[in-house]
Length: 98
Image (cartoon, rainbow, N blue to C red):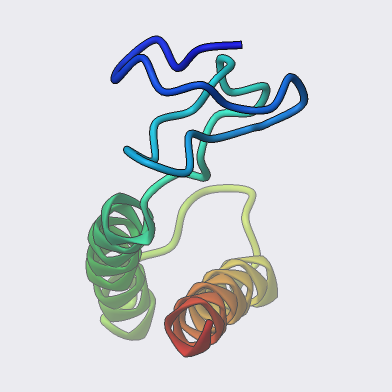
């Protein structure tokens, strides 16, 4: 078999050309997504959630009450968002270690 790029004779089962390094077949799998894009999206989500957290908590402490909604439900929602933010931050730290 010959390399499609440089024309060097290579073994039939070769995955890459030993001379030029080009692949002899098409890739079967796509490379993993870039962590940079994922991290940027996670930070944007973190910022939006943090702003919502501050707005909702401020509304609760200022005395604003949504009809038919108890304070504990709002606080539970805030704690849930805070937990999700912590999970996103932990996932970002774990991705940076790889």
